[in-house]
Image (cartoon, rainbow, N blue to C red; front, top):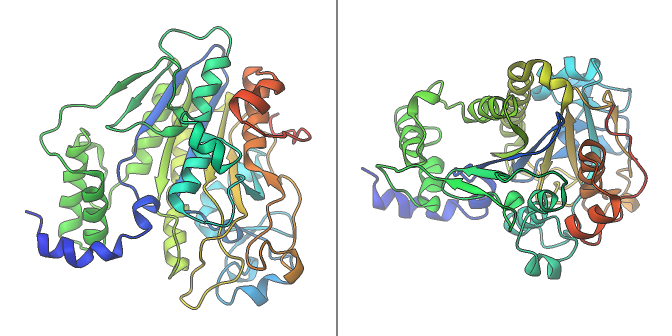
Length: 391
């Protein structure tokens, strides 16, 4: 039985983490002609790209970060003499060496200044260019992609879970499925339950099991008491992609690192790396036609705060993996971390719209016209030059 007093005691702790750490993790899949596959992973909570891909070659980094992002001398893996890979992503180093991992170090949606998880995630999934467009555009960019793709099948998409991901929500034909549950928890109750019991060795396994039941998932799918949702998401996604599915999206939460970032980010990056490795292993030869794009709603401040963390920022990083990409490199320019280089004097300056990378991938993988990508799918987008993302 859940203790109401405990709920009230910890309710104030939820705050912005309701968006940063959602437990209801819907998955969405779509069929499309051909063999090319696209997986979009939403990293909810604003991943610190400066820490994930550490620009240790920038002489201003050490003055901004006392304990974070300090490069190969502190355990990170050198990538190209300027950037280093956070040790939490070390499982992906073989992909980098094989040319199957890349990253864009200074990207963002057009979202600026308000730094709200909810609004930032809405804009990321809706694919719009302004707040006004976000209010008018209620569908997601993957759904709009399905609306303009040639030779669509009648069963275009379906969602697993009680809620759809906005990124694939919209008028394109879809089917949704939410299994009958013997336990009903509201999304807020699920978030609170996870937050309250996350570090409790006795009660956390029970809470994970309860939420699994509430979502209609068999508790047998969870590998251990610590949960392995990220692995199950990846494995289920791979199973669908090995069949008729060609487009998939799911989210991984836990990226909000206001305090104690060293431990929190390390755990989250290991989960992301494990999910990508599971995708590769389970896809087998289909990995060769797969592109994985991991995106987050915004970045974090360039300067480390007094709690060993970072606050909501602007420019962030996008991770790209897959057998279909031209990897082993950083994508785009680096804006610098000098005082005059920062956005609003505090954040990494975005040098490219993250939507442009998604648009170029969709253009090259599925043959969608640039005019449609810059209009119907991503309103107001200038795709800019071809980043030659795909092999």
